[in-house]
Amino acid sequence: MDDPRNAPAPIFAKRWTTRLFDSNHKANGLRYLWLALLSVFLGMAMSLLMRMHLVWPEMQIPLLSGMENSPERYAALTTLHGSLMVFFVLIAAPQLGFGNYFLPLQIGARDMAFPKLTLLSLWASGIALIGFMAAFFAARDAGITIWVASAGICCLAGLLGALNFIVTTVDMRAGGMSLPRLPLTVWAWFVNAILSFLVFSILLAACVLLLSDRIWHSQFFVMPEFARFDSPATAHVSEPLGWQRLFWFFAQAEVYIAMLPCFGTTAHLLSTFSRKPVWMERGVVLALCAVGSFGFCVWGQHAFISGLNPYSPLVFSTLAASLGLPASFLLMSWLGTLWNARIQLNTAMLFALGFVSLFVSGGISGIFLARHDLESVAVNDDFITGHFHLVMGVAATFAILGALFFWFPKMFGRRLNETLGKVHFWLTFAGVYAIFMPMHWLGLIAHSRTTPGMTLSAVSAAGISMRTFITMATLLTVAAQGIFLANFLLSVFSGERTRERNPWNSTTLEWSVDSPPPVDNFGTGPVAVYRGAYELANRETAKEFLPQFVAPPPDPKSQQARK
Image (cartoon, rainbow, N blue to C red; front, side, top):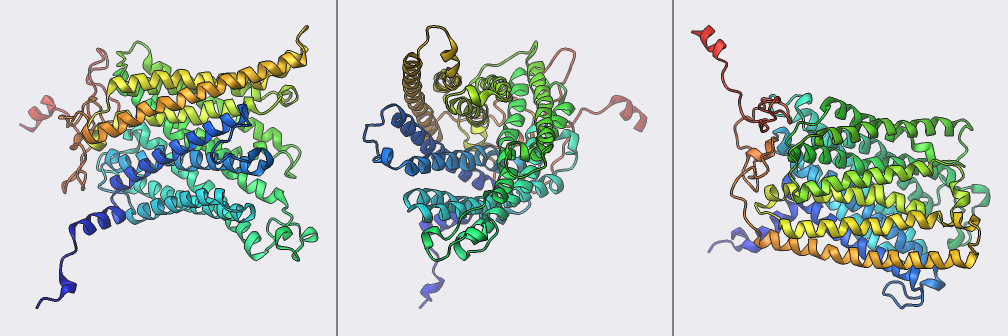
């Protein structure tokens, strides 16, 4: 008889084993996007719960019961919301999701340089997500330890992913794909990977040292003269300055880690749907590099009481102000690309334009934060909350949604519904402005106290009314995301199929293969690249783009010379 151990495995087991341990870059990119989709809806639900608790604190809300008597539980919910949105949405979706999927396709490679590292990074991110969720439900001290360990695992995942991106971009480009011919999306992923490699390694080391203090009673971030080891509950009195410095190495640069891929994606979409080359493309590349460089150097901008040299705030403030130069150039390039263009207002283009609008609005509000007296006139941190969410969270989300509508036909071979997409865009666009612009006004409501005839009770009543308005706008905006979710799920399983490889008439290499792309991307033959990513057939008459993979016609003069 045949040995049963040699019998073939069931098809179901094979399928799930293959899915779980498939190291192909496209499979892992999709997994990161699914992880980001789960995290963004969890994060939105938490933000909605927090807004409801602020306006109606007496309501018995799930996960928030007894919150008024336990402020640390509310702080834990805020921390969980921020952790999910930062690590698994703003970092994972534009860089690890779209980047893992499309970087090899856009440079002519068959996979990432280290496919196993991609898989290891993905599973580490999944473990970190479970750890963050578990930290919320654990006791306070245990929850802090679990959160720090999860943050360290997340940093390890980001570090491995950054290394993979750098090596892939440098060493895996196809023949003819020189650096000037790289799409701006690739440049953004590459610069972002370098920045991530620097800052994730620092925060990973800081998390390891902090865990050592908490578990093994070392003294990296502890004041030994105050440490009491006789009681586990008060075993440590933290000395925060060392941790603060290492933390801000990551935290300040993390803003640009989230935004850099969005800059590249937005420029790419604006050019594609304006049917014009990127205005000053080489300057945009230099601007992306400048954002990455300055973003790493301004780590001490918020370290006001960390014992640094008294003149250091001047240095860091100057570097932070210098970020306005490359950011302004990026904005000029986007507007220059749109000038006198044949704009196609599909959903992807609308989200790209929405990103530009939100980026400008958030940047203008950032000018007010540069005033040293803002803190003295503000009632609370609502102004900062509105600015941060507008310029980073919401703007980056618009860029992610624009990229999803653009690349969805290539990833799934189907189209997202344009009508539902436009309805979702306009409801979300109006909703986020209705949420975060009033937060700016609420943060500056103390100015009303100096107005003649404006009493303190009137100011308080105005604040309560504005918070209620913000909460209602949050409810409607979160509800509008159900349109996107329905559109996404219906399109994945039963959407309109794309019969052509390149429905957008785009130029980059991913549109030269089938939709969805085959496992080996470009087959066994070599990939040739003949031109840059944004070249027109005739610049004078603004004719259609020439794809990078189309060979130029033979030169008649060279043919005659050969004869």
